[in-house]
Amino acid sequence: MAQDDNEPPKVRGPPPGATAPPAHVKKPQIYEIFPGAKPEGQGDKPASDQERVPQPTLTEGLQSIKADDFFGVHKMPCARQGLMTGIGAGAVTGMVRYVVGGRIPRATNWAFGAFFLGSILQWEYCRAQRNNERAAMARVVEIIDKKQAEKKAQATEAARLRKEAAEERARQEDAATKKSWYKLW
Image 1: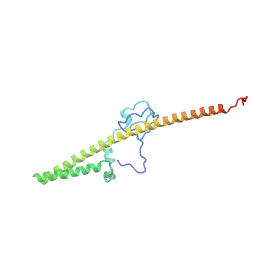
Image 2: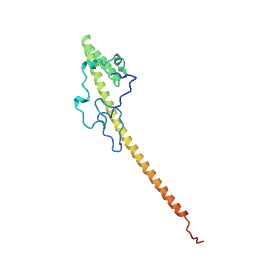
Image 3: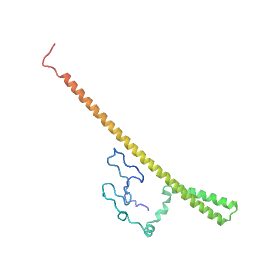
Image 4: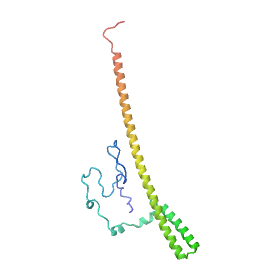
């Protein structure tokens, strides 16, 4: 489904499989909202399957396909890699099958099968890599958030200690500058 340019992107929560926010994060950022999911605090009672999202029908799915979807295939992640791998696998398999002694229609069938299989396998491999990378990035962001919170806590503690030291110096200076009512010399 292509998203309209005038429609703002939907905000979604953390990716599936993401870990819970660390203890120092009081209100985690919500990046995306998945269909049927409610953000925290919007209903304590879990919704039943019927209340979430109605299951789409085949006709609704077919009606959602637009011509722009076919013209934008090259923009989809992993599509180029999958198609290029499929083309290469199909060409090599078809040529080898023809050279080995197959007839042209049979070699073409083998080429198409290899194209289809190679494209799907490369597509799935690329998607798995992207999902792994996304999960790793979520962990990195979590670690960076934790380190930033630790640094902020350390900076706050250092500022508190500096302030206390300055107050102590000021008290000592005040005590030193106070003159007694008598003067010995």
